[in-house]
Amino acid sequence: MPKIEVEKIESLGGHSDCVYTLEKGPRENMFFSSGGDGVVVAWDLNDLQNGRMIVKIPSSVYALCYYAERDVLIVGQNFDGIHLIDLEKKVEVGSIKLGTSAIFDIKVLKDRVFVALANGEVHILDITTLETIGIIQASEKSARSIAISEIHGHLTVGFSDNYIRIYSLEDFSLIKEIEAHKISVFAVRYSPDERYLVSGSRDAHLKIWDPQHDYQLRESIVAHMFAINHLDFSPDGKHFVTCSMDKSIKVWDARTFQLLKVIDKARHAGHGTSINKVLWSNYNNLLLSASDDRSISIWDIKF
Image (cartoon, rainbow, N blue to C red; front, side, top):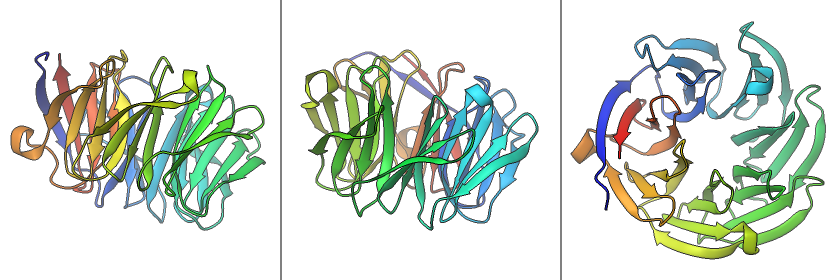
């Protein structure tokens, strides 16, 4: 097993409530955060003590999505809809109400916005007009996580009814559905080369699926003690991390799926409560984590 060194660089405490989401920024050294306080903060990894509030909305934010092609940050306001923030002008340039459900995930591809809602719907919108292109209604339980594969032409969604459903990016027709986990699927993510799909669940299992062979199950791993909330790949694609309600971050080999490192409170002064989101930055390979303890931790991981 390779030796891995982990150093906690900083702990950021700019939020007054749980931090639910992290998102990349327009430059490698920038990222955004938000959570239960409704405040969206822009951070600079070169100047971590001076986070800058972008906008404050009156309810929790579970999902942010930065769309580089238009330099727009999409903010999911729970029980209301999405807001588009022009980062250069620092003004809201559009919004659309999507009913009264929580928004769990947002992705953008070629001016199409995909929004996963707690009522089980996935809305597809045109970012230029904010008109609805389509609505996928596959379950009465929450749509929790979205992953997109351009190579395969697939839109993949993890639901709280235990299923992963794969749709065509062309016409949004259902291609396949998999009863993937015992309970809610909280995270789905394609590897950077899109050769496999990784899912994480409230059942604490990590599963590896092969999209080149009809999404056959390749690995099933008891990865954490409690729910896996999120996962992300390293910039070079060689590793990925999972974060959990068990207060730990785990580092995995993306080729062998072996566990390489556990980052927790006892060994690394990690988070004291559930870790909700991880973001592996291109900037100096720094790993970011967000927690119910209202903090964001910055980790330097050396292999």
